[in-house]
Length: 281
Length: 302
Ligand SMILES: Cc1cc2nc3c(=O)[nH]c(=O)nc-3n(C[C@H](O)[C@H](O)[C@H](O)COP(=O)(O)OP(=O)(O)OC[C@H]3O[C@@H](n4cnc5c(N)ncnc54)[C@H](O)[C@@H]3O)c2cc1C
Ligand SMILES: Cc1cc2nc3c(=O)[nH]c(=O)nc-3n(C[C@H](O)[C@H](O)[C@H](O)COP(=O)(O)O)c2cc1C
Ligand code: FES
Image (cartoon, rainbow over all chains, first blue to last red; front, side):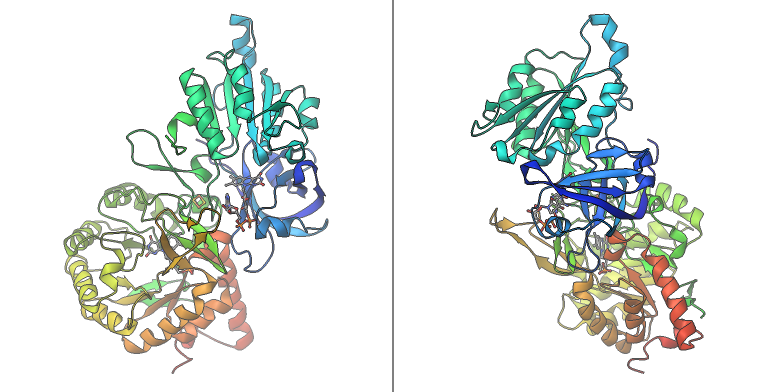
């Protein structure tokens, strides 16, 4: 595996916006990171100087613009660090380390839709399943998957219409978008795995599913896809300190008889679902 | 200012050491920082057999610090000797191997295994890890068992021997004296303080193994007090650590009696911290007219 290029830079905050679904979005000027970042890579951010909060916080790249030298992150306020980030003003400089993790690229996995398609007729599909802020890292993958000839569709769910993030950019890039809400205020009434179930029946071995969201959602998908032998990749979160492999803090248990651990920051954040234990199994 | 220090016969070009557990064996660090800014590096706590580590979550931020319960995840002494140390040698920075045994016998075996490797500059006997069930801190909370663990390594290893102490004791100076009687050439301190955090939503401890070790700025005053006491209680040099973030913190430890300092948690937040400390020390030396960093060791009590 090639050594990723990691940069520790002082990035200017270009814009901060409160968006639909109650999340915040910031554009950061970080040309070194934007130039090399891949889908599903993340950055580790010192949200403010000083010791409170003390450690950096990890966030996925929700948009990568190498030509403009810009990266975007999208977050929900869940605690101190994310709360401070919501008060960032344009012009402020923050320390960011990245890009981190292996990311997920279809090319690295030897998956190039365009070349497989002519055999069977139907172009291979990339299905994205997202819950909550799990939608954030999906967009860069859509961009790269379209280039490799995959048909892409998104299954995205939340509690209610108000809790859902904007999916316009997905639709604009030709991605088929399916929505679910638990209260039925938009799209399918129920959880996103219920919505996805109908599509699962039509998937074949050349299709792949990539999911990001709460663990129970990932667990459910793992058993659903497992039963039908559909390849599922899951993007995992674990509490992190360094984000680069120094502390061994971000452990996730490997599945099967192997009693070991893998690390979200260096081995992930995306794992083939069969290789890791998601709990409840 | 001359930054070089002599540590139990080992000369370091500067007094800033990578603390064990935040540097791995260097492979990850080189992607984010330059090893050569360190005067020496202490590698991840190494055990006789490979260890997978503790169940997650393994880390949790706390006010001005963090708890960790990594549980000595490491590939075992054999892999360290055959693969990790030869790779790390290319940087020309002295390597301290941090070892942890489950019994006196194991400490002795580790001592003899590492004495076969020419790439080890010093051994650091970890009698202070709070995150393992067998061994670990158990050896460091009692002067007698600390003496025996130190002596077990001393019989097998003839190079510089450092013993790393835990602050989770009544009288740290008596444990330090026992280590010196057992053959320690230097004392390093402090390892982490045992702590706990509760997740109020889950109504359960945050960490997978319940308790963890507290590190970072939160423990600095405790660490300084330990260095101040121990450096006066023993005739050997002390390596001070615990919450060091910048050159001012490093100077406090040196003035309290530390011959060298180690940075742990700070590396996780700011990988290039050794460089900023070294540059800060040089600037301080110029401004204050200090010729040798070693002139400042223990000035707070001398
Ligand atoms: C690889 C990776 C990518 C991520 N990408 C995004 C993203 O794109 N958008 C987004 O909104 N969030 C993302 N997260 C989660 C985000 O890092 C946490 O929400 C954030 O660190 C919380 O910081 P805080 O100070 O606000 O919360 P704290 O006050 O520290 O804690 C509040 C809650 O957040 C959780 N938490 C704290 N630290 C972490 C952590 N390091 N990882 C996961 N959960 C944590 C805790 O369980 C706690 O309940 C990602 C996490 C990882 C590991
Ligand atoms: C993630 C982590 C892992 C650690 N692992 C070890 C270890 O393997 N062996 C050891 O002797 N100390 C270990 N320590 C303790 C540090 O070396 C150091 O003694 C302690 O963290 C205090 O210094 P600090 O506040 O600068 O981090 C670890 C600390 C942290 C934060
Ligand atoms: S967060 Fe430190 S090793 Fe992954």
